[in-house]
Length: 381
Image (tube, rainbow, N blue to C red; front, side, top):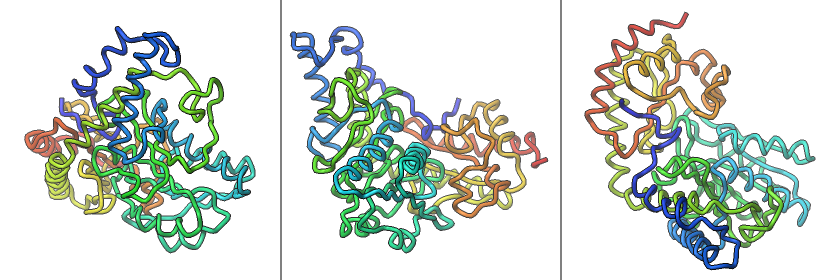
């Protein structure tokens, strides 16, 4: 099998499983307990917090462990907006048309609570329209949420320029770094953001674990209420093993990034060039250079995208047509249509996302299989 769907989930790294194993087997006490086993669990949890904080350039107390990227985004969007409304009366939220549903849906939920929402457009490469953004931001805006790198097409957003628009107005800037963590530098100071979401399983961690890094000066209303864990920002008994795994995966991926990013970039470009050479009219989606190192996304005019996926799967190649979180939907990708593609063309999309074990031989094997796969899939009917 050739696995090219790391944007959906990346298989757990062995070192991550080894780091988490003691907290699945031997040290299993509740980290809120004051007895010795509880203190051992607490020490592991705080060690994981410190390890994640070092990668993100924040204080350990600014890391909130969550059940994954979706919860982290929800906590940021809902928690920051509601806290700002209560403290300052700001009830306006801004985001972009190419966000993950984990940002768009809570932003829409805020509208039902009386907030106003502006969704900023993007250009044909998926880059946020900075002029539009500047026009809608005001001193009544509580939160601006702009993804770091898009999960479907890999386009990297100019967060420094976005931050320069938000900062003078006192607008809190959140970014979804679920796809970019481990692929790009994600220190909050360097990006200019106030909060940032990470998902462990995109990095070789365990599913169901992630984190939100949020500056201590940013008011945050909890979404989950209860015992006041995570310094009152996220109640619930901490999953120590998953937190340890998420922090380990983030640290390992970030440490490997200086060597891994250029390797994956070369393989990505090799794959894209091969697809464009094999399929007349094929187009790369997303920015050609300002994109994730591991993300190769294309549309194939006149080709049945789902049929191609099925044929590739049968041939032992695992990839996707876009976001795994919306794979059951028959609607065209909201990301691609926001970029100006019509719905029929958007439905021909393929997304190959490479990972640590991807080799040049894998890329060449996919390109060798592709002509037969396209012939078997046939044209759009």
